[in-house]
Image (cartoon, rainbow, N blue to C red; front, side, top):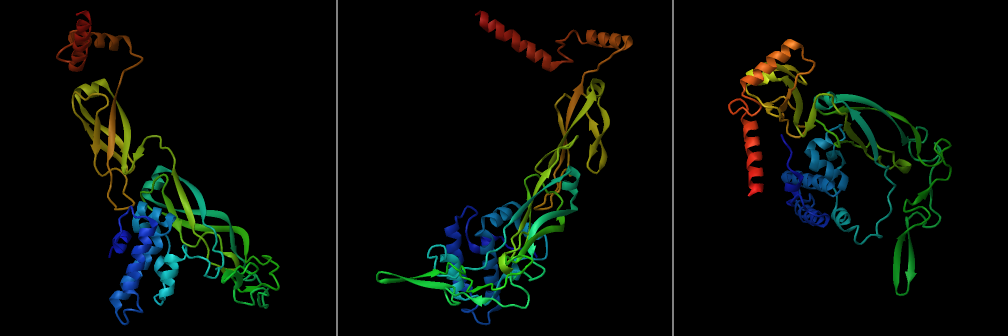
Length: 376
């Protein structure tokens, strides 16, 4: 079953600003939150949809990917967004998400999530059109295999921060007010590492190469991006990993040019074929096909072969192949060919022959009128 549009779920237009998205999320989340709808499975499902839509649209990178690819942007691996939703989120979570950036400073600092990474991948046109699985190897900060990302020597425990005594926050008095701030010693983590891991020196991460198998969907194009959930740098001291974005560049093809889902190619023919017509074979990415050339075909004429273009990565529809005809002037003629062409030209009644060269006649008639007007 196809998923609902995220903008439609939140009831906002595609041009909606961040504040409008937050406002819509707060209103709907309050309405369908499971705490307000005990035992209502439908409300629970709607709350999941609302939270999923908000998680995507409030993030500028994820929103850009969704606007370009739709739901397929987040189907690279099995780590989909549903797995991160918690149905038991309380109302403070909702207000914290929506208003945290306005009233910040009253929430404890969380462990730093790993950075997102970008990998530039070059594909041939055939690979981009048909889809392919690529193996890549990237140097990356990964979770330490000795301390499993904790940063502490195995068998040892973290100790409470001596500054905030394990609360993660400190209170400072300013006149009549008492201000609560994140502890500058432990950065809100409440505890500190007493015996750092010898392998990662307390960071919980070490740099080493990582191999990944990436499925490239059929129809992808230059400047498209593929997002791999949680395949970026590991977070500090066990925090979640960032994402990996694969930036696509399609190499120039010797025959075809691509414009969205259509392919274009130039097909040269001799002037005999252009004048008399006939059948020729033209290339496609799936092999050769026959193309009927009508008599009297002019250079620059385009013929459309339907369904021989690129399959859309968004809706699966196939584009067309457009063949642009180039009538080629013959070169390196022998004496017999020159004689035949001379006789043919004489039969036209000169280069302005009315019957056989209608475009030439219109052009030179127009030139004559132009100079006649100048003489007046």
